[in-house]
Length: 558
Image (cartoon, rainbow, N blue to C red; front, side, top):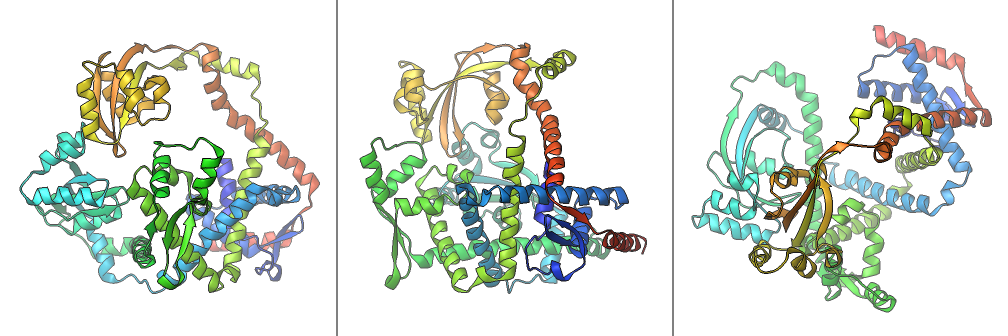
């Protein structure tokens, strides 16, 4: 909690030279940098609103002291040369690109967005409405269109749900999602569902997860909605509608811009890139790897100024996106969407630069805050990195809470991962005459399965996530599946079990250390922060502090 609250200060305070602080009354000066009373007051009030805490002198002083600590830590890291490190340079470029895209969106996409009373009223009704709906999921538009055609031809939701959801609760319930209300589903899903009357079926709807075909079963709206209720929630509704309209505007712009760029993909490099992302292919020797990186991958842009990215060009842009986003790419369609998005992002950045948005004071301030946030995180991690929990403390904690440390029940599992349900079903039929591990070695897409025979080892219920109950209910020797997992299909062979048992100290040691480590990390950090106060000059200007306290007290009693 202490670390999180310190990070909040980095986000709240605009520590930019020349941003007006020098012309305001300084509340304090830390290592030569002034912080104005007005800057502190604004951030402190925001902090109270976010946390729900009530102002008092003790809280005020704690906020001030933690602010000083944060500034000292960032200053020390800068003095130590963190800005010359490769990690800093990478993050700076990543933050710069992200902020340019946001600046472009603010100026070009969001500038004319307004929220009307009719929109607020519609959302207010949705807040007081519950829908019950079914849906069919498809990973691609082509699959979704095929499912929709089969529905139109007379096949039932229940039949198709058993097909698309494999062996899941949704398969058994005919895709029934139960009742849901406002802001509980994907925005595009919600928009389509609320536009339907009971019994109506939507065309395929693009969501963040793929495509859905929706049938509304029931709708219930609270019968009495008052103006007083509407007025009390109007501000929150307006913020919500504005946020959603901006997200919709951005999505629409990306779709239209991608179409205008006329993105085309070059083979065989693109197919090989998809196989790499899905874990189906690799490059073994340096010469082949170098040739692959230089191969043309994608072309886009107007006819008179089209450009082509090689695989290396693509990877240079892709590394500025989140690792989780890259790791989620399994199919060709997902890779195509990802590359189109990068091409549109590149165009937005270039337009923002051409308009000089990166020279605006507010842009420079936002970039500086982002960099300070990164520096703070890096510095904190380095300060506490050498923390050691004393051995006698670990053992004393174990003896005091021995009964709490248990090695959970585990079951051994083998897995075969394939791309399609039909392939999984075909392999399951062959299990009568071929060993599970032999099929895993030959057909499983899981990296390393050729060596392990699909053996995942002994796993706990928690490690298996939603599959946990199903696996732990199965008898040794049983084969489960096909089960859909993120657009692919698995077969699971259940092995022997290891029952739960008390954990001896050596097995519990890592968990005990995890439980106690934060306390010792914060002790180490506080000691370091105390040393920084002797190294750098810190001045709190008491007259300004007194005036600020009086102003806050007056505001509190007014």
